[in-house]
Image (cartoon, rainbow, N blue to C red; front, side, top):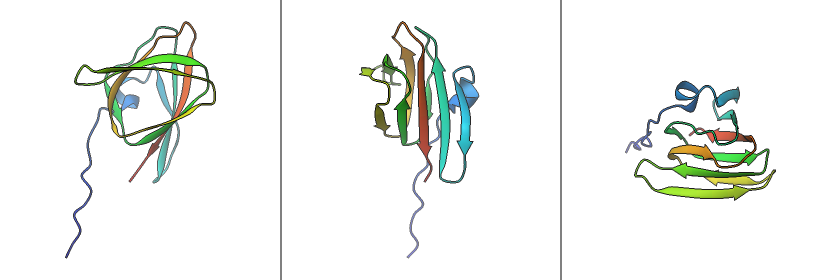
Length: 108
């Protein structure tokens, strides 16, 4: 009996829809590493990531707005690591300082 392939969900790619804030540092068949930089008070557009790991390079306070209108606010310290499930969000830097984060997207 053949196994069904895992369902792939398609999201707006942050590199395509928000190249101002996102750039690819490395990509291979296992991961894509993004460097994200937001100025004080800057926000992105709605986009998505597969399951990912974020490593914060600066202290920050930020908000995620989700497609259903729900929001989450987070406060993180430099060096903190956060794991996120696949999904869409619109990030906004609520800090008065720049926000830098490295996002490691996991490929299936």
